Picture 1 (cartoon, rainbow, N blue to C red):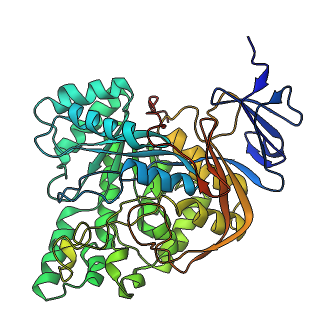
Picture 2: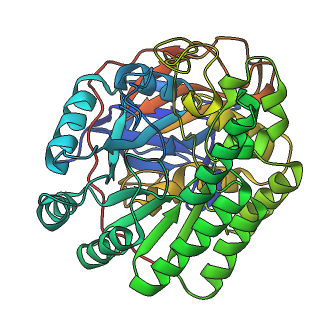
Length: 465
């Protein structure tokens, strides 16, 4: 029997729907969008007035590291509670983080452990990529196929880093399983030999400061590895995603691979679009160390071109939070060489405002393009049905934006547990002010109201072309 009332309605806003930008109202029942119309058919128990504001699907961030132990044995600064709180305040209502395996571990136990952490802390819905570090001991033959069947249909492979990288044979074996069982394989694509070669040279020459991190990850490392992974995808027929593309050449390789019919997608991140390598010459450069490193203005322009022509379909945060102390960046001391400083920056809370400002406020692209890049396309890429769109039958995950609200980021004004904002001093126009997750208001007038553990695990559907 149809409910006599909506649980919640959102009225008066400018809504991005499958039909485009419309002035319509939204009726929500049992956490789902039940009706979208200029005049809703029922009254509501609760209302949100969105007059004069944009009503957009909640962001979907499919690349973030949460409560994760790195290959070097460091725990991220964020728990699922602090990370997803920060995500919600930035307008994101779905995360896909990592269940990170280390050598000797069974993948099924790794996934179970991460699911338990998220079940306790996450305030928004979530899924996982399986980081595969060990294909032996039944992991590839038993655990991974079983987990794929359960709905964990994304695998992450590193082509570098001592404790997690896979050699070419193992990568091909994983791609074969993914193709057979219906999973997508995501790559951190950098050539390990080139990085080792450059790192040894720099250290031998006494060039150990954080600014030399960029030189230790030359663009050629990304170029070679992206080309090789695209060829592996072509050979196996598996569907792949290249994470955090940072170079002009990397984007062009993906463009050419897609033109050949290879089932490959690409993402980039705000720190490649809004930072250049010069930032490693600034005060406290360890704050900005990430892999791959930031590149040049020319690379930024090429990445924006790749976004415009559809070569890069996803922009994610690569939220990798480490505090600026002995628990994080400086686990090996404040004077540690660049290769002993943890890589990564917080980004869950800043991703959407930075992209909204660049695309919508500054007129680089349409409102619909912003929504697709940051919500719809990521949800589709990883089979997150019910996410990334405002449509009847979809989850009521909605962010209401004040497109006129201006914010200048401060030194430490994010709601995560990292302790600094890498975009300090950046001014953005357009901010999410009210956020709804599964029909629950979790941010109201920029104030957080979410409850730890209220987010749900999401099953991924099999990948499509």
